[in-house]
Length: 307
Image (cartoon, rainbow, N blue to C red):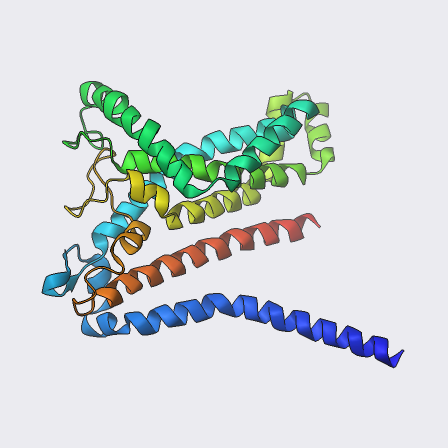
């Protein structure tokens, strides 16, 4: 009996230790990035690094504003495209699809989630970039020649191309989480709405989606987190130009992950260059952790309120 109690205690303590080790990884990574980025933070204020667009490493200027704006351009386009389609797909799978159809579609969505980002990047090069260059941009230049559709970049490598590829990549995450949230809504809510004379769609729209709203918001935030930190796909199709802020959907964008992947290891002879790139990585890490914590916090709160 004493031996079994000893085994239980050791197992419990071991699992607690492993849990704290996993939780401490993010803190250790952030601390390591902060220490490596400290020389550039000490040489210039964080505000100047964040809000200046002057990126001239050879002159000691490391303003990250253009990269931060480029990241938000690509991420915003991805979320705008992905959210409506993902939510409607999840509603169909959870509320309307026959079981055989849902069972056929779900593995395909899971397959999309498991595809390597570089494959999405190649798909973007072969399909999305020509689509933007040959069809979307000429159409918008002719019929919508105003901000944010006006641009003199005719290559197709643009914030829009990066946003479309990222939207495809975040589809599976948002669909899976929203569908799971919708399935947790009690059947009594649907039955009550139907008994009051609502149609099936009205019951879903007015009762089910309203009840599942916190979980849907959390799913969008988790998708936003994935899009914000994605590297390879945007590096291949977003253009990654150092010229200035993107002014249009069709201008090149240079997101923070692409900056890190594209430049770290180069120009290491330039003082503070690697520290500036690691400061960009620290910003990316903190924003991604923040998005994830908010998303999972909303999901946990929603689950507790349903319990």
